[in-house]
Image (tube, rainbow, N blue to C red):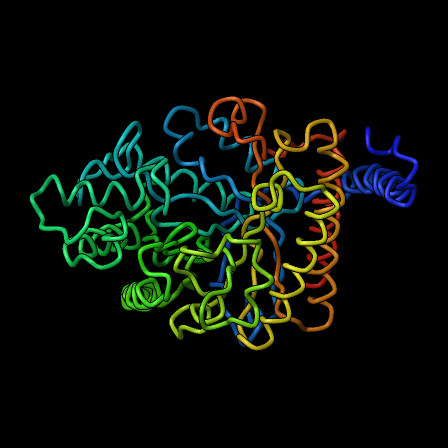
Length: 421
């Protein structure tokens, strides 16, 4: 509320106070209309049809969250996972994005190429079963661009340790080296064909899974043309489809415009796309990619700029990608967005209300007019215990009746669910 002391911005203060009043009301209303966790499993596979998701022949809109840590946390404490998923279900959230990998290191799922820790795999089994019990579908990401959980760097290191001849010292060998690509293909095949030890259902036959994500935020700075990533996405998405004909596939894109969209590059945050080797529209049009994704972190991408400038960028970023969705003719999911309390300080609630409201309004407007925006996943949902242990980036949204952010999330769930009826 500190910025509300600024007399030069009265409209902003009034808007925030109104949002708080709406949030308080919607939370009380939500208490009477909570979505009770169900013990029944989900049915039907979500598919893309034109620019919409469909389920049982009807358009589907989703409101959801990221919780990358679920299987990682479940190895130690299933109670934490149960708590997060039950809270999410109580808010009407229907889609979760989480990691289906941990390459090397502590609590590794994949210890080395093709060698797995069964306890970590069983933790992922548990996450899927618990998500289904709570009526939540799951996007499973299969590898990371970054080294925090192993990622492409670990695959390259495994190849190096095995004496594989590498043409460079770059982690981008992940996208081109035949041996490394075979490591990855073998891994995703083993994940997709795994039979859940709790349900007896193969992952590829489980309606709980919404889609497979090839990589979290793929980037290839060694090839700014985008060709390397394009052909890798094309190859790997087709490979997933050859194993699993039930589920959708998406690439994990952040939404940066590349060389094939020069007229759009001014929408990128200044300088951020230079050297990332990505190309949003071109990659989204790959036929074996079912829908496209966009991420947005104005507090990181425009660090040091005013929140007003960050919001101006954010609204333009959202608008541009919704507009592009009509041309791409595929559903659009805002798969990551958020603001960190580390960057926003005491203004975090006020700023989150502003940013979340803007995105949710744009999605709802698109959805009600038959547009491509199909939902959004906040980064990230967590309990108090998880925030202190594995979610220390400041983006954690703690579900609480005292939080205006929580209330906005709940209200968006109610509005989008009404469109699915």
